[in-house]
Image (tube, rainbow, N blue to C red):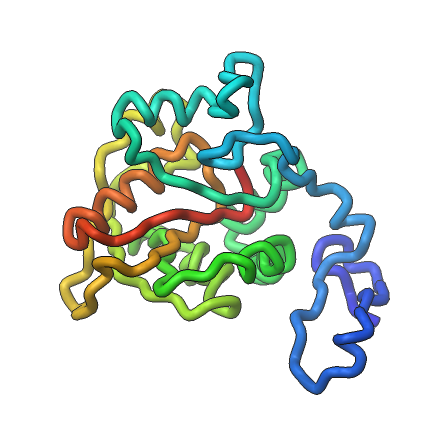
Length: 234
């Protein structure tokens, strides 16, 4: 029996026959069935570029959402292909408020529980987390994105973030889209990402502005890197 990290009720994790017969250490579930059911998967038919839900203004024939049509106008065919797992609903909103605003570190294990199966299906040479600014790390005492993914894949934290800028979560949609570039490649990393598969990792994809800035920063130094991205939520 385990205690659910959201409701604190005891529950029995479901184990497959392979897990029962194997000596390998398996990921342990952190959420009971009731709490897990509050999170809504992205629809099967979604944007073919970013995994986003197709709203009324989306191009249903081409399966491209309005956000990605906007990025196509800026980047042409060089759009960022993104995979996500869940829709941003009220349950996810409440989870992220407690995780990021109030700094509840334990909730990183909930986010791992929500994404580890999907992330394991994506193979990359380098897994690059979207960095948290130094001031926010000092405030929370941990890096919110690296805390989610650090136990799941080997992270290559080559990106840094300019401090002193307003957090994306505190901005409205227009302000997010108008955000200036704030990422850079750390000088201490002596690696070559050219011709390598690079997966950018974030917690939430909202407008895509953050991940496009991160990709642009990587491409500025490694123009032949093959970059895609992943988040728990879209």
